[in-house]
Image (tube, rainbow, N blue to C red; front, side):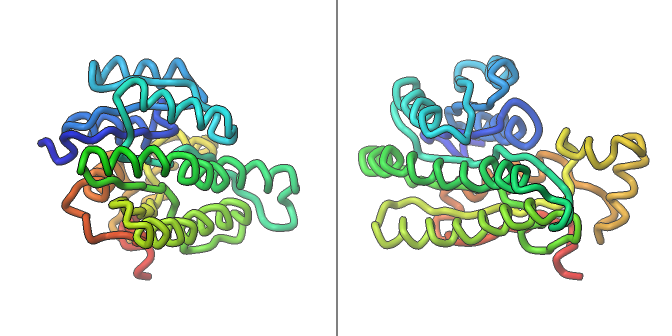
Length: 257
């Protein structure tokens, strides 16, 4: 308990899935949390479940103006920002020949450009908050094991998530050089039991689909949202004060194959 006490966090894509799980875990560990999502009602519902330690705002992560509004909301609501979790994303699978340029740009806009915008626009407030409070800051970018291990039918998704991985390293080095007191790391989950898998498992049925995906993973099962949430808690806590520019694999051993 209280591993994140005194910290203020903003988590994108927090209406469901990994974002909601992280928001609940962060609040349970003592943080105050701003939940953002293009699904504003869903984010508000999750914030209501958490209680006074949470607030929410509608947020299209591809919009500079909505990023600015979300960051300003964190400052006016809770007084600053120590932790940014860039979680919002979509899954889209197709090979390079079958992927339209429109789909390519859409995936990169949501999965990669939004991470750039979040880091760029949140860092000034984060740096001020860390300096004024003396409490360390952290950026956690949710990539994917697909950003490390490619697939023949995931050209845009592989590219975007690999971009998140390397952008994270650049941001980490920038923050270190500026002596901001802010680390930046990425998390690379394998298949996790969230609504993002519906497009993969839908034609098989939920249980059969999850079992099929689990057979591809050395540990024999897909992950749970809390597996990623606990990893994010660690990276955002002072336990990880010497960890930056790192990609944490929550992948059931698939990258070891």
